[in-house]
Amino acid sequence: MKNITLKVQGMSCQHCVNSIEGALKEIGAIGKVDLNSESVDVTFEESQVSMELIKETIEDQGYHVL
Image (cartoon, rainbow, N blue to C red; front, side, top):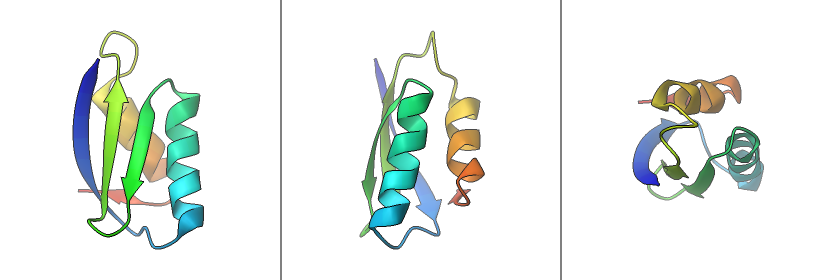
């Protein structure tokens, strides 16, 4: 398992947390949103989920990955 931390802009409330964490779960990754630091810790299996897919998944929810 690999763990990364992404800076994400546009998150401000519990709906944002649920949206991102739920979308990541659907692709097989585990996401933990931290609104205070505007970051998302993501744990995933590199053989099953790519970094590109993780970024696309978050951006598809309406947020910007830096």
